[in-house]
Length: 305
Image (cartoon, rainbow, N blue to C red):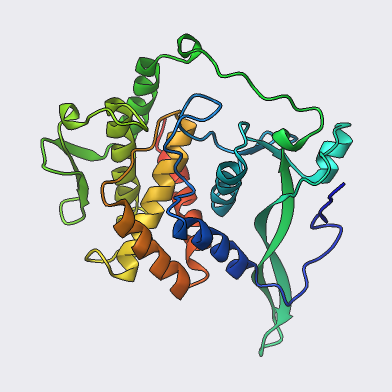
């Protein structure tokens, strides 16, 4: 039986570069043409989108880069549940992992105390890792049967929930534009008319509309008077690519929460190329972008009365 050490059982050695390991994982998927925060097909769940991964003991959703890492593992291994736990946690529930199964790495920040030149103790953050297993990897697991379409919650209900979320942000949104974009100089989101969105293989026209709107809302959250994120000025520069990555991840997190298919961009290959460039140039980029995406989501949620 394959086991993985928990963080409290075995501390990381100083020679492991966790940031590089995480970045290499995402780079490997992007180089295959796979965007690990999108699922553009109908899986066993018959939804065509991800659920937010959560821990089966605490019932808390994972945050930031851990969402992306576990979605990547879900894609690679075709898991059909979003339930995860450490080897020890499963064991405490009297569950056993199937022979030969490997855990999926997730990360967290710990702090190292170091005395500075003034004799004061400073806490220095560094990344540590541990491993979790999906419920699909248990000996007791039996594959879920696909739910008939009639059992899935009606889309109208989902629209009302998202409309309420969008309205609570009080963002200024103008429809009728030739494309979808956030204009910082006006602090305004421009969107095409709803009728301009068409059904695709990965999502309906309505889901395409809302996933696009949520993407622009994440950009909106980064304005100086809100979260004040640095943005690039044109496609191709690194800051632009990083901000697009934040918006992509933030909208993916929200789409998963509201059960919305995440629309495929027409410039799929160009965005992958730009993200690969910044990830290869800076091993800290993907962890930081995922963290900023979670901050954006949490900020907008706090705007709800």
